[in-house]
Amino acid sequence: MARFVEAGKKIVAVGRNYAEHAKELGNALPTEPLLFLKPTTAYITEGQAIKVPITCTSLHHEVELGIVIGEKGADISESDAMKYVLGYTLALDMTDRAKQEELKKKGQPWSVCKGFDTSCPVSSFIPKEKIPDPQNIRLWLKVNEEMKQDGNTKDMIFTIPHLISFISSKFTLEPGDLILTGTPSGVGPVQAGDVIEAGVGDIIKVTFPVEKK
Ligand SMILES: CC(=O)CC(=O)C(=O)O
Ligand SMILES: [Mg+2]
Image 1 (cartoon, rainbow, N blue to C red):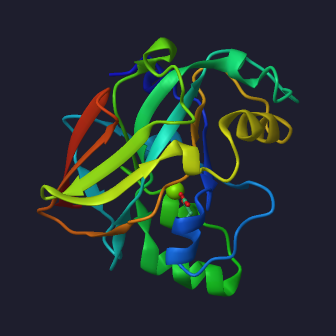
Image 2: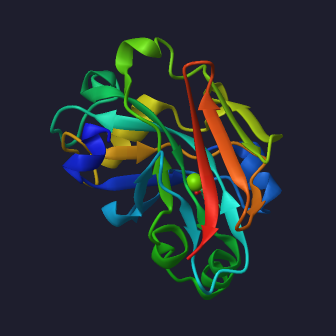
Image 3: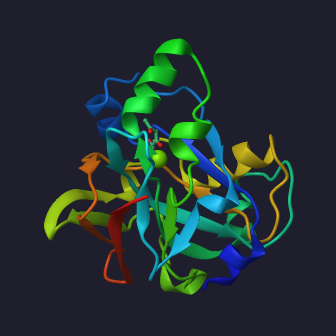
């Protein structure tokens, strides 16, 4: 299991960081990063299954580049931000979309639709040097061997240094923290019996089955 998962530090996720994805769900583009948190009980690693929450009627996949933090820092400048990056992971931000729509209408927080057990499957740790340009790397995801998401981190609205700087102005970042940087377009439903494969370019590939809880 990856050491950042064992460290059990916080998971900070960014929403609507790709214009095409914001558009596909009918959301306005953010004027500053939209943040939410997942509990560490959301983590799973390969060999474990994504469990559909009992009351969930529409579980969606979202493939994302995860940033693993290596050093403690608050109010980090954009120019220093990359020094705080230890490496990366391929992450899925599994989302109870029907619940999210309901919560959005009521103006309520997203914890229950984004933070349920198994909602954050991750790959093993990717050392920083394996992704020399994290702002130009392909992210892809297949369901039952069919390509559903095929994007590139160059299309992020807020860059990785900007996200690190912004997040660290709200929450002190600590070694082992994970930042989910948002998903490109193509999100969609999965159900028990499906198999998700996803990857970061040719660098890493993961497989997660979807099962009933
Ligand atoms: C609409 C969303 O669920 C936001 C999100 O998580 C994203 O990656 O974008
Ligand atoms: Mg997401």
